[in-house]
Length: 170
Image 1 (cartoon, rainbow, N blue to C red):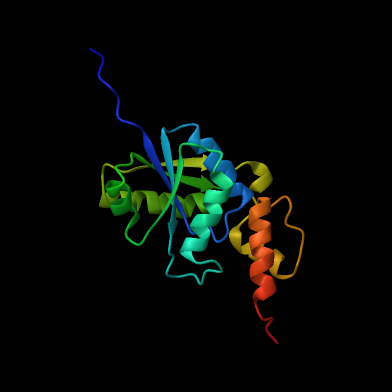
Image 2: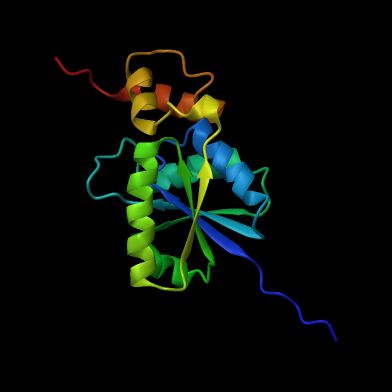
């Protein structure tokens, strides 16, 4: 009798404030590598987010709905604890530059120290998104710049609405 393999589950954590085409590239590629990919929105205490965690989850769900093995969730804990809780095998991280790699290597080493069962896989960002970050997208949106190649349409609309409703600083 053939033994059934446990599903391979990966967690792609981030603040995703907002999700960009660079994030989407990683999500689409990682979703092909694992049976389930959990896009996990974290509440980064060192950042002041534009979108609430719930808004980010809704936005990510709206742009990943075509990927049947992608689930959107959020967490407020150490990443390794969340990965353990979700019975995941791997943490997926996108790398844009050498600077990203140095930072991500430090985090991966720390996570492995905290939980030896947790592995981190780095995925190189498509070169056409190597300059792209959520911070850059927010700044461009704030000044009503062109976002068409940077974020999915649903995200552009949400950004426009968010900044339209926000009072401008003097």
